[in-house]
Amino acid sequence: MKFIYSLFVIQLLFVVSAFSQDFDFFYFVQQWPGSYCDTQKSCCYPSTGKPAADFGIHGLWPNYNDGTYPSNCDSNTPFDRTQISSVLKRMKSEWPTLACPSNDGINFWTHEWEKHGTCSESVLDQHSYFQTALDLKHQTNLLQALTSKGIKPNGESYTLQSIKEAIQESVGYTPFVECNVDTSGNSQLYQVYLCVDNSGSSLIECPVYPHGKCGSEIEFPAF
Ligand code: 5GP
Ligand code: 5GP
Image (cartoon, rainbow, N blue to C red; front, top):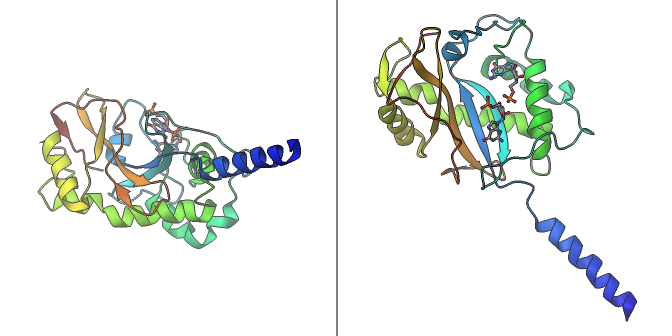
């Protein structure tokens, strides 16, 4: 009897662990290079040259519905560059690094995989993780969403509301816009967050938004 009971408990634990979720959704975060570079900290172009004047990928971050998030989940699966060889060219153009000193991007991708990607490896292995982010960038096409509404990266200011509406209308989901400040202290469009379901397959409305505030009018600097 005791033996059967133990078997039952083991089975129950197995079922619970199989269905318990490692995380609830992803933030897909894109950065405007002009706003990364015109700050006090400045930036360095990657060794492959100045990136395109387009949003670049920052990361795909597993998150919980309560706003907290897991990080650095598995030191046994370090970044392995051989797994991204088929997307390396796209990585260089669509996920460029702007940190100093100038480097080829491997450091940035390693950091993103190890801090965030290892927390979603039950659904996206390393190749799929990077491929999914590249596909999401293509799908969301933020620069097109904004410029088609007359919101151009020309150093002018736009209302935060108009930026959010342009993205909402084109992408279909409400973004979270993060601002930073340039060297003159102006608030500007830095990063755009969209949410993705926990299989990495569809955009969703965000269950929770990050904290932070932009002014009601923000600059969209050139790059
Ligand atoms: P910061 O403090 O600059 O906003 O964020 C620093 C880093 O913390 C981000 O680049 C990201 O790796 C992580 N981070 C910040 N906020 C969030 C969040 O809401 N969710 C997740 N998953 N990571 C975050
Ligand atoms: P997170 O903020 O995702 O934890 O990580 C950002 C880390 O990646 C920082 O250590 C930062 O120096 C490095 N990094 C390298 N290139 C970039 C870039 O182009 N943008 C941002 N935001 N961070 C970068």
